[in-house]
Length: 504
Image (tube, rainbow, N blue to C red):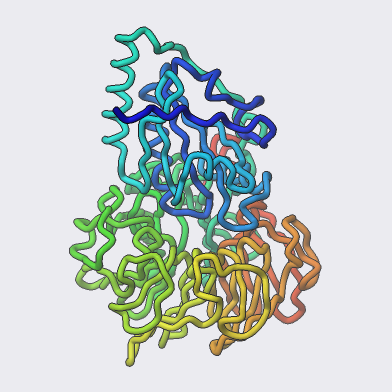
C-alpha cells in the first residue's frame, strides 16, 4: 500500500495577497485544496486561471484554491508587482508569495504551472503540471467530495476573502494598457484591462471608443462589440482598417473605421492545444493567445506566445498558419522550420526582417521575410534564465522579459518591461538604455530621469515615441529630439460604468 503523504504546512510569516490573514492547511480541513504554483510572466500559468475560476465557482462551498507565486524573474519577486498582476488578471483566490522557493521545494514542484491537490483530511492526493486539465480536475474533485461526504470528513461552507480589487478597484480611465499604435489617423490604445480599444487624437481628444468595456466575443458596431484583454494592433491606412490581437479570446479581429464595425477574421474563440506547426482557414483554425501583429503587404504576421511561434495570415485567402517556430519553448536560430521562440510578445518590421520581443528568453530576435528566411538573435543571451540589465553588444546584452519592440529610423526601440526601461538597439545588436533609471514609478522628465512601471508597448511616428506604460495605466509620449517624457491626458475618458461616455 502506498503511504499517504501529509501536505506540508504553509509558512506563517510569508506575504499574502487577496486575504487579510494567512491560510493554513490544517485550518482548511474539511475542504479540497488546490495549490497553484505560478509566476505571472508565464503564459501557461495565465491559461489555467479561467479553469481555476470555473472550479472555484462550481465548488465554492467545498474547494479552496491558493496561488503559490514562485517568481522566475527578479521583478516578479516584488510584492507590489504581484499585486498588480492579481488585479490585471482578476485573480480572486488567496496568493502566498513563495520567497526563495521554499514551498516549491517542500512540495517537490519542478515546473510552472503545477497544481497540487490536497484532500479534506490534509493529504496530497495528486499533482498535475501544464495546462488543459480542467475536466480531469473536475472529475477528481467530484470523486474526492463524494468519498469524504460518505466518510463525514467534508465541511460544506462558503469561504470568503478580502480581495485586492476591493481596496484598489480599476476605475482609472485606462486599465493596464498593453499596446499603443500611432498612425496618421491618430492613436489607437489597447485598453486591455477594460476590454476595449480607444482611438484618440495626438492631443488626447477621444475619437472612438470601440467595445462595450465588458469582456466577451461579440462582433458588431463599435458600441456593441466586445473584446477580452486585447493587445497588439496594426493599421491598414489605405483601407482604414485596424487589425487587433484579441488575446484572451484567442482571435484576430478587424475594425473597419469607415463602417464602424468589428468582425472576427481568425480563431474560433477557443484556445488551441496544438503546438505543432499547422494552419487552415482563418475562422476554422483555433489560435493560442495572439499578442501582437504587423502587416506586410497582404500578410499579417502574428506573435503567438501560446505555442511559442510566429504565425502568418494571408488577407486575400484568409488562410492562417505557422510561419516560424517548432513549438518548443527555447531560443534556437536557423531556418524557419528549425527555429524556436519563447513567448514572443512584440513584433515589428523593417520590410526585410520581423523583429520579435521574445520575452521568456529576454532577447530580441530577427526573422527573415525575404531570402534567406533565417532566424537570428539580435541581442540577449537567448537562455530562459539569461536575464538581467546590461547594456552591451549582442549576446552580452541582458534584458528582463521584454514585451514591446518598434522599428524606427533604422533602430529598434525596446520596452524592457521588467527593468522598467526603454532601450535602443541597433540592427547589429548594440543595446543602450535611453529612458528610465530602472525604478518602477510614474515620473515625467528627460531621458533616464523618467520612471515607468512595466511598459509593454511602443509605437513611433514622426519625431515622437508613444509608450503603453502598463502598470501606470498611462500612455507616455517621448519627444525623440529632446528625450523629454510626458504623460498624455485623455479628455473626458473614464472607466466603463464610471461615467457616461462621450457621444462619439
